[in-house]
Image (cartoon, rainbow over all chains, first blue to last red; front, side, top):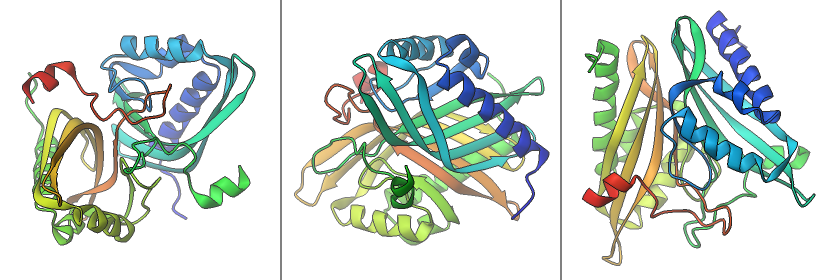
Length: 152
Length: 152
């Protein structure tokens, strides 16, 4: 096991801040995690969001269908960090209680890319998705690593 | 317009090599573009591939359904590179002629993350996807940037 570098530790701390803001569904706190000219590829509804303002509106729409807090867990997390650029990927378990009281969750693939601005780590790009079945074009929302599905 | 750094130019050169190998559907050439312990999230069929060996088998299956070469275009490309870590994202137009002679193509979101090993840039992680429609869970394979759809 290699000891994490100070860059990796700083990136991990920023991820923890992002997770906390996401679980709390706090758009102002999330805004502080991202660069303003973020490019975000989310798992549903739109091809891309090319600013935090556009992404924030999408999040507000999503959060309006949820009774918080969200379940958001990162498994199989990998962080690769240099002094000013980093990328992370993880198997994400994402769940919520809908406004109708029913619980939903699914496994998603998450990539989070960061850079520093004035020495502060910020998310510059993220990409969250589910694969689709090429026969039916249906999103495979119950896919996920077999080992993790057993313990979820 | 900021002048590209030498890191960005090196990453761009590796992307060009990756594009050429992908279009040629050349799995040996692709193997040289990736780290062996790649983690790949592809747009269809499986949640993830946790080595180039696993990903290469998936590619071989995909290529068996295609009469090459593939159409693979990167639009709206962004590269952020430090000395040893980089990430890129792009709107990808991906097309092929199926073994039945019919042409298919779609817009996909592509994230490509690289690191250096012994001074050589290699892809350590990639993520390619389509968003899904939350009402139907169908992959939105005809989504894409409106401006680009006009010229495609």
